[in-house]
Amino acid sequence: MKYAEEFRDPKAAKALLARIAELTDEIGATKEKPVYIMEICGGHTHAIFRYGLDKLTPEGVEFIHGPGCPVCVLPMARVDECVEIAERPEVIFTTFGDAMRVPGQKKSLMQAKAAGADIRMVYSPLDALELARRNPDREVVFFGLGFETTTPSTALSIQQAARENLTNFSVFCNHITVPPPIKALLDDPHMMLDGFVGPGHVSMVIGTHPYDFIAEDYGKPIVVAGFEPLDLLQSVMMVLEQIRDGRAEVENQYARVVPEHGNPVSIAAIEDVYEMRPSFEWRGLGEIDHSGLKIREKYRAFDAEEKFGIGYAAGQRSVQEPEGCACGAVMTGRLKPTGCPQFGKGCTPEMPLGALMVSSEGACAAYYQYGGARAAEAAE
Amino acid sequence: MCLGIPGQIVKITDETRLMALADVSGVKREVNIAPVLTGAIEALIGKWALIHVGFAMAIIDEDEAAATLKALHDLGETQEAHEAMAAGDRALEAGA
Image (cartoon, rainbow over all chains, first blue to last red; front, side, top):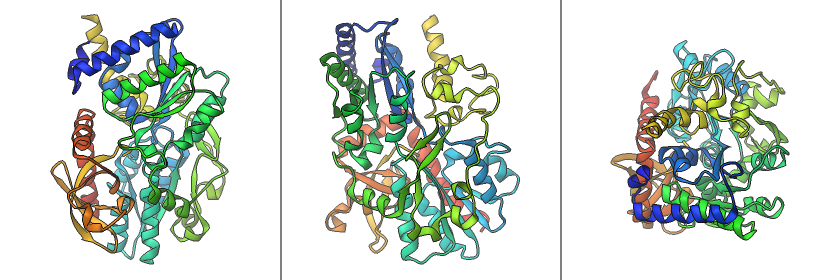
């Protein structure tokens, strides 16, 4: 219970953990036959490791770390395309810092920058817009990356660029959506998931109804959760209660931030600017139908794919993952991070081979960062 | 990048572009308030919002803001957000 002392309300944490233990017994889940709960969001993965929730909960509850870390599911080919755009002399390439160290086939954006490309880390696509205003003789490209949490920001920025008639601003759109990979995982006959902890901030944008299919079509419970450790424990408890009762519902533990119907302004901007691609490639998961967004025809002047003839506009170019990298198996829950032969050897947060080691939200980086300390403590 | 961070809206800076100054754990940053604008723009002053990559995405109360900041601080996300904001400021000058 050492970690529970760190909680804002240790008493509440202990009560929730006791309730989770009772429910696990009532369900009859054991170490040999656990209930598998997937936390979809990479932020939740990070929080689970940070607070040691996987160790505090009973052995009969096993967390499977979902695909909700956008840099982790970014295929190498897309990084190569970023580098290709960034190396054009007229281009200022802007990106969230998270994407800088993701390995490409030849180099990462960080390495391309070191080699002389004008690549700049920004906090917001609004920074890229400002760069375009200040540098009318340069082409400013923003790397649009992320799930529904960041999609509104690029949609609203493109709308703003259109209002200002900026001709030197474009977005290299690689936005992806949360529900399709969940459906793909549920369709995988090898996947043994019993329930889900749903993403908090994605749901703040899209609301809770996009998850209805999980309960209605697949009969699995899902609880949208906040990021505090107590939120996560309460959500796990709610998932277990549904399992015990034989219910499958979409519940909202994070209603204080997540409205049932999401954020209307953001949803309208996304619908105005983007349309669904027929399919999109995910690292480790392959091509998934209707899972990635493309900039609509009416905003094609702001579409870097159109402007530079690159990416999905130029046809598929799938690239093999690096030899020995087991990111795909880890991401689908078939392998624990520590089961990868490269873990902590050929692949570390300082020198990542695979994308799951790059971001603090990636399962491998979380294992690496917190796993060692926990193992040492267990040995005490 | 994916987690929002609470900030308090302190001033409207551009009514046309819907920009406001927010105080994010002591760092002042201009953010877009379009997603949370439901009434008079001035009514947002003093309110707490969850801010994602420069956009206020949800209005939250002060207690929620404090609790979220604590959780984000534990995860190292507050520092990460501050570093990203500083990087954004540098990007506007670098190579210019």
